[in-house]
Length: 187
Image (cartoon, rainbow, N blue to C red; front, side):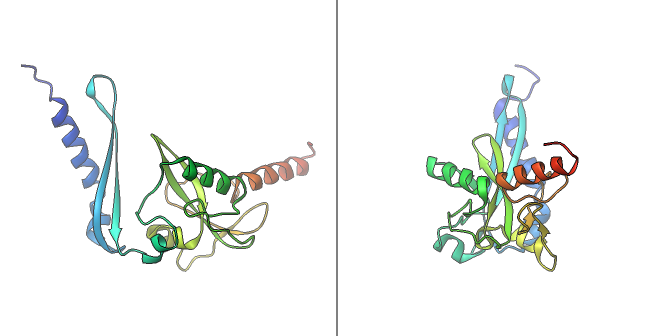
């Protein structure tokens, strides 16, 4: 028998470590009653765990999110082609909520949330009713950044690594980039 831990032991240890990393959020319970914990383990060659991520979901966090077609879990996940098309439309112009598809007003503040897509993620704009309790808590009492192209308010979810200007959509990213180039004298 080998001295190396078996695959099941490695997976159990990685899952436990991922949950321990969320201890403060679990103990704070600010978002409501803990409903469940999802742990995603990415296993590499030889059964080695290369990535472990945990996600918490809460009961009665924001009841109307699910009733209005929004996401009811603490995590936004793209699982169908309809989800993918909705998120891509939201990312393109920020005219619809990436989670529920509700039309967003041109001057409506958007919340950029992380969506799980297979083994990766994308950031997309959502309306207030589909924003996570964590992001709403972060935004409380603060002014949103203004999109460099259209001027709408933008709040970023934690972990979003943006560079420079606030941007609400791919369209506005292109417009802001073009304006920046024109300002530098390049067209």
